Image: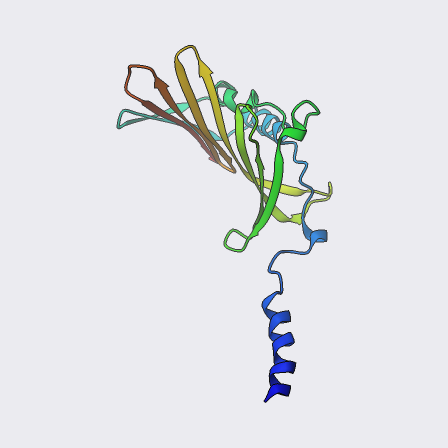
Length: 190
């Protein structure tokens, strides 16, 4: 009996400790140029023949209107003005972690900081297959952005996906009720 336990225990320990993470060599590089990606996508949308819609939601009401491709740049300003987290000035203030999500079948890279930067967190979801450029293709970008202007605290939850982006702005001004407004831009082929 002791021999069976002596042989089975190390085997069970070895099987139980097996990591479900992808091997390090399969992990795309964590240095994603999110700003370049967003600028590139906006430039593509500027000249595309997609149909665009803006959905604005505030105070429990939604309004949907068609917009021109030239209007997309205006509504994408929050993304276009994000600081570059890979720049030398702030790069060391962010901790980068990653995991492989079995459900999405993608890597998720999280950039987070405890420093007083407007971008508190940024999540980049990346295809697991490496493209010819040696990186994974970005599937989505989520940004948690905080700012203070005069007497207002502003939080923006921003998400960029393959066929849409949105910015939800929550404004807390002293002595006033909280305001929440979402602007979502979607596009489709004809």
